[in-house]
Length: 183
Ligand SMILES: Cc1cc2nc3c(=O)[nH]c(=O)nc-3n(C[C@H](O)[C@H](O)[C@H](O)COP(=O)(O)O)c2cc1C
Image 1 (cartoon, rainbow, N blue to C red):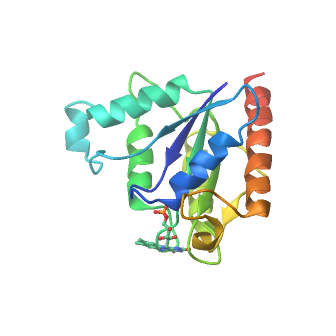
Image 2: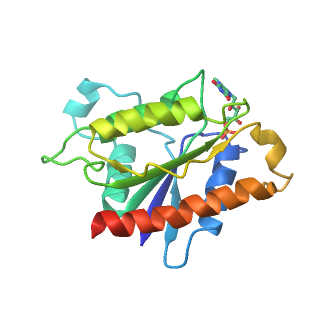
């Protein structure tokens, strides 16, 4: 079972990338988690689209199609989905040859942020956007890593035991969810 994990943050020291790698580490047996990002994707523009999908979008699109499930690991910016991630979703949402990669795709999400909400708002918005696109988003369990700075050590390891347990639980449930949705 192949899961493509998409990080919603670009910065090198991203806590969400660290969270993503923890999710990969704690994934259940039989699940392979591949990491990807959104770097280099231009701002959505129908005039660019009319000339053909940019290479970065086409590559991400193919990887989404090839995956059994998509895992979004994203921060929250100003109470919403980070613009770069929303932009990537907007590109991917476009039908090419009658297809877009979210349709009937098992999806899950988690996120880490500096505030008390731990990405509650950005995850809610992301759920709404991909629902429109026909994604089969796992209802729960949910993982909101609040005050995230305090939960990782200097090497980027997620040290907070309850958060590690929550991540492991989500990944186990996602494995079951993918199997159920495919069945
Ligand atoms: C533009 C911007 C807006 C932010 N808005 C929020 C917010 O609405 N809620 C929140 O909890 N944290 C907010 N933060 C703090 C981020 O959650 C924090 O920087 C987080 O570590 C970013 O994720 P990353 O480490 O994966 O890059 C914001 C940060 C930036 C740069």
